[in-house]
Length: 105
Image (tube, rainbow, N blue to C red; front, side):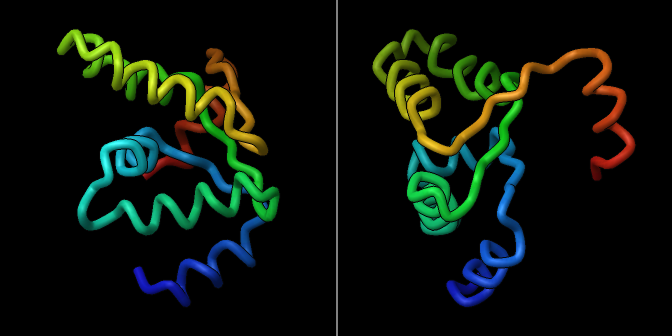
């Protein structure tokens, strides 16, 4: 995705739903998607956009580091994600799962 398209997306969408993939791309500096993740998180950190993320995504990004006994990476994920300003966490409930499921691809 070009920088111009990212900018347009961020202008049109003040609230952005985040998935665990984007979180992993950011932390692990994915060669193709890291720049996109940095741009989105930068916009969230400055308050230009608000990020919304399920606590399920936090679980998903922590599983692999803990499985590999990589406490340093798990701590890095946790610290970044739980202290990011303008990032709201939504606890997954049965009601939320039922509301969101029909709208996922």
